[in-house]
Length: 222
Image 1 (cartoon, rainbow, N blue to C red):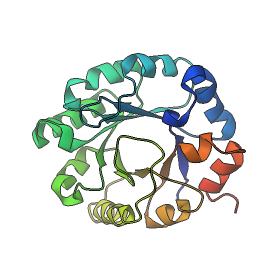
Image 2: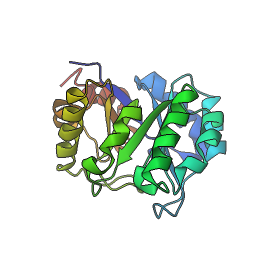
Image 3: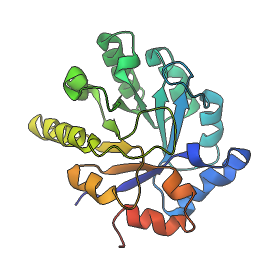
């Protein structure tokens, strides 16, 4: 089995003490810091932007896994790279065109940052599969992007399997990430489907023992 990585979403952290919420991730055994950027347009919620990403970069040595839920993400690629994103994923259906999405992915890669696209539950994999050739990672949403704390959509694993088959068929080296309602009870199903990076927010930050929760999500302990 491939190594499983956990990317705790700071959306579920304590915004009054974000430094503590971010610093705790490495102490708990997390591998990435998941930053949910929402613009109030592509999704109805509004979170934070480049200044927060830049501030977080200064207080952790873990890679920043930045997920853009914003309209025309191609306009902001340079700004988020400058802010410190190590992984930069966006929704191609939010781009002005598929060509703009492709150019954005190529630009991200040219800057030495890992690029990726995100699929909402209602977006068909085949509609944007051609972009996979410019990706270093693919993120499958198991809830609808926009809010934390939603319940896991089991059918999202079908898209994970579809992505895994495409990656295998085309001999690509792209890890599959999943985000939305991930808990100890569904982590194994996601991993069995082909996921190697799990984003979890509430399951970790609301846990009485986040370190043990992360180990269980990685299937290191039962």
